[in-house]
Length: 587
Image 1 (tube, rainbow, N blue to C red):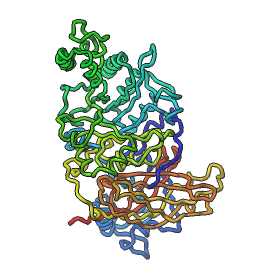
Image 2: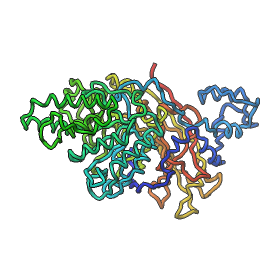
Image 3: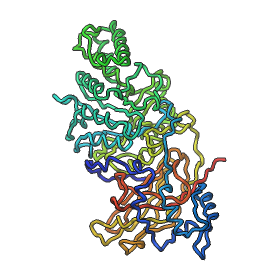
Image 4: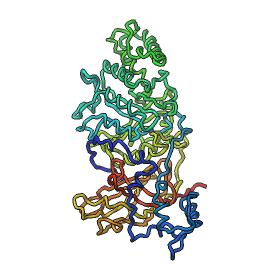
């Protein structure tokens, strides 16, 4: 499946872009209110849907037959019947074009699954969250951070530099991008962290600050995050806390390099005799924090046993005392498996590709069952494009960090995936990824059949440059998941001379079959293109859903623009009517 190569535009400051309609309108009431409900007479949709259940001569369907239709096709026990007989056109409009008939099952958080270690979950994650557009040239903005959080993101990345008199700043690589103060970024996170989800937010620091400024980072974190800041109870972490235990909290993730440099510095200074007291001081400060002696977190005692080195060792220890997730480099998977402590690490897109090509999948999954892996886009993606996150998810990588400002195909897949579990930003990984129960996949588990029936609302897609030209519509049905579950199929191209009205609405009645090996990891992406000669696959709309949440039967697919808003405007939108059939190959 090819990636969208469109260039992300600088983030609009419109409040409208803070919300994803798939999250804010989960019941579809706003969507149905705006839907035109016009269909092309060339395809009698009601006849196709109710074929075999109604009297063809009178176009009537009896209540008994309608109940049978809902049981056999929709897999539902539909009870809301008020008449003994219905006109099939009315039945289609009333029962099929309804807010309770969307293709994705409205999910809620399964609280019973939220008590395992953090490493057992996929976590909705962002890369360089503060950047509003391209990596090298765009502004840094608290609006970008707010937007990511409102879109369900749970991992925020901040690149930290010393700054000036206003304190540490957040910017990218110290180049042409503008900066924001670290304090303003942390304030925004505090205010918006739990607007869409009660579950924890993780701030991952790409920390380029000097030792002196690291102390200031710690003070700002303590001052601005206040009661939401989660402070680890122990220096050594043998197991991760659970999402349920971290509700309402904000965690800090930082690289372990500072502490390692400090130990080397202490050894060179020949003060090893005082090293134990140093770490005792660390534990004391942790206890002080949990005892709510906040002043002890940020002050440095003049009577401490630290050696004379401008007190920089205490600065690194102070910041370390509020870091819950250590970001480290490790030598081998064997050493990671045998170590007592859990940790996290970061792989670039290139490292991810190298590891998946050279290491066995069960070895990688055993690593991510215990430790936390963050994967991020290649540095060459200067226009803030993304990579397909599916490969990283297939080896159990918890944090697949994407550029949320890109609004490209990987982001659409990510949005679809995280609709699961009430869109809380945490999805428990399948059992076989958490319990090292990976088995060789030799045959598919699920047979998925998608029939694209017809579309409605196409008036909104008239060519802006040439309003008299309606689109030549083609719909791409893509499966994104593990290596075996990556496939795309296309409908034929629908063309019409009509610009508006029923005859402008595309229809297909075309069926596509997918063999799904790992349905728990798979996302179905529907993308609509204009194939007109004047355009090269002009993007029109998209919609994505976790395969595990697809509902069998005749269903409505709401269509979204690249930003995640319903296509159209406040008065009109569009949809695709599809039929979903699923059958398992397991006995």
